[in-house]
Length: 594
Image 1: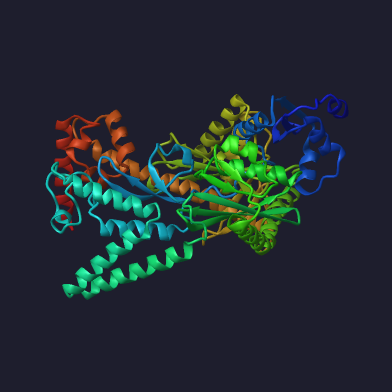
Image 2: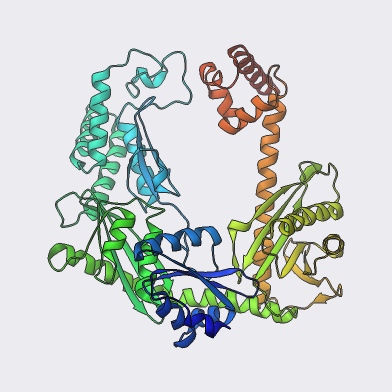
């Protein structure tokens, strides 16, 4: 049947979707020629992960597009929609820090992170800064040298910072606009590459402190000046056009691609990003896909230097920037530097990378064999928390093919008001899998509960009620709160596992992860609960207003530091004054107790 279907694929551009026996999409790809690409999986020679993926494919579908560009876009949208397990995803979801300048309602400089750089709402940002410490230190120094707003909220009267010249008095409407514009121009000029401005400011302050015999402060600022000189000197590159650009170098070896992206901003090399990809079918396609994914999450510079294997026409159109393939000169020299970095990184990391990947995959396969599970792809693990007898919660973490799959993690607020592990487990298992049945989402091959026979029985009773046949095991901890025993849910027998084995470390990792996830959720609820109980004591604050205050301020200290004017945007002014008075009196009482 599959062989006949392969013959019918057209020689046209488009996106294809590989499906397993359950009809789940496990891989999404795109091609200039669908016929050649899809047939290559089944008629050509495939190795490694590609061979494993093909072994699971029982069917495929495809979408014909008008062009290769449309095929790119379709592929991206389908990957976001279905998150197939064999597609390349960014292994590291961290967002790099940027220095952000905010002009209104008052000037601020701070370090910000954006998971999606395109959602920055036209804010003025500079970076990225892979060295977060350097970014924070620069921001701290700018705040120290310029009279930016230093205090929380908006006081009625100017504070000490204003009187010592470290604030322009933003709570006072009569701000010196000339000073404000001069300060803003200097800060932005420095962040855009004019180092001299900040160095001159530092020297001016150092001389002032020295003349007033304040040698301690002069020494501190001298150390800052030395740090800035070292950092900025290291960052200098030979390009002198001050164009913000990235340089992407790569190196192929042993079925892997090492990638090094250099970030050049305002003629300075401010950092780099490294990544390792596993080649599945076509390294050129892997590289183009990676770049496309990378710039959906990070700042897009004005120019990106790449090798000629990249499809610069399609990438330029989709990412909306200028991709350049340098042939010679300084740009070629910098591209070669990125390629050398990629080679060094790959050679240094590939052994560790392969070992960790193999350890996770091997441990998952060994666990499947130990529990007589034919295909152990997905594990759902549960833990309950009801510390101090309040805010009972449960957490679920998911591991797929031996790796945590955080997109599927779930939190559950339990309706029971008393400590009852059995019924708590029943409630969370019912809610999780009753919803999965209704929505038709993927079910696990194994459920692990944190606990012994009592929790196992609660899980099995609920699964039986839902007519589900899923393997269940329990993980017990010893007196030192360390993973100790694996209990088989079918026989209630303890499965002996070598404490030094991959399987034992794998189970310990799962148990620690679900415990961490659940406890953090419990702490969050307790924190919000304490805020909630305090707000309940103020007349005029009902459930709706309470939720809005908690959502905006997060904790009592932030509410206490907010002005009546700010609070009045959520609650009436009279209630805002009452709340402020209540918090002030509450603090006085607490201080007396101390």
